[in-house]
Image 1 (tube, one colour):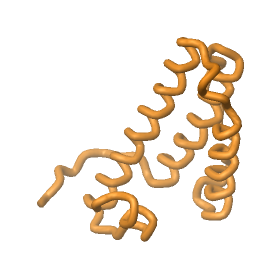
Image 2 (tube, rainbow, N blue to C red):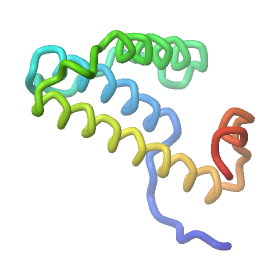
Image 3 (cartoon, rainbow, N blue to C red):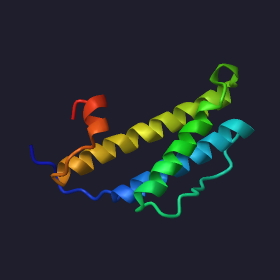
Image 4 (cartoon, helix red, strand yellow):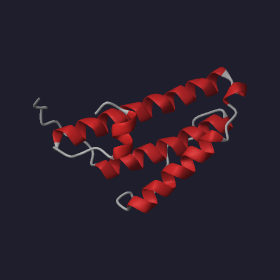
Length: 112
């Protein structure tokens, strides 16, 4: 299947945006309102830097008690989920479009 040659952010840009969204949405959920987008990931091309940031943001999200959220906070949580799902789709398209291979973790989790 040939995919059209449409522009896409580089993988590092996708990962930078995922980390920034996790940080920004988490802050918004914790403070009950959007405070703007920011990202602490300064080296999105360094694997260890990206993995550390993804792990840290995952841990921080895990500390939120989602059962006690207001409706506005739930909307923010769903906004983050939607944002991350869109990036997963973009990354899948990028990999297929460039003839790359998926990490083993993606092959185990998804049918790619």
